[in-house]
Image 1 (cartoon, helix red, strand yellow):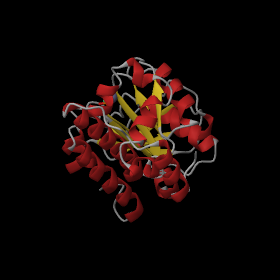
Image 2 (cartoon, protein in one colour):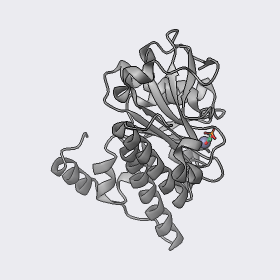
Image 3 (cartoon, helix red, strand yellow):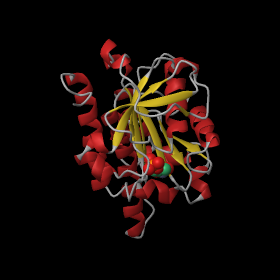
Image 4 (cartoon, protein in one colour):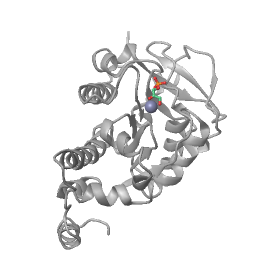
Length: 268
Ligand code: 13P
Ligand code: ZN
């Protein structure tokens, strides 16, 4: 028996997470257990699921998150590998229910797989998204090689320097990551401080770069969040490739960027 039995919409969410987990591994962004994914699946939850008994004790989130009352999430398990999540999603992730105090969660299905250590960041972000009436349901954290490499240089950590550089490498990057790349100064992985600074930047950006660690992206679904990271990292690869050929790439001119912004009806 699985929670996914006779629930095609919920099963589709899990399939999409598994598909993206496979891409993260293939891209080399998910060494060992690196990265995590959570999806707000509350819209697919029926009365039978609401009545399901917990299969774990209540556990603290680390925050009180009032907008998450009654919400359900599908979460990668801590210490679980993306490459395993791709093939056996229900052995490497679990569904959790937020308790009425909004400060604890419990696991409800299928197996008592403990959620990712980055749960504070993920849940705080979902709480923020609901609070602002967003239709975003998915958050993805991963370790894309070239973007992480860039985060080791102070110059690229200044506000919007990396955004402008990456947008100028190929026109589609601004088209498909129109809010750019927010920068989060280094914080301890899985800490509440990391969660809090991520939320601050998500007011202006869908994708944030965690200095010397990885990226954290949000979007309507897991595939869309992956795509935003993918286009940014592609631009980083083009930049690095040009540097390796021995020259500083020109980048698109301001005029070319303006023309593109108008043609694609993008924010300034
Ligand atoms: P988890 O295995 O706990 O999801 O952690 C992976 C990670 O990338 C932490 O930042
Ligand atoms: Zn990480």
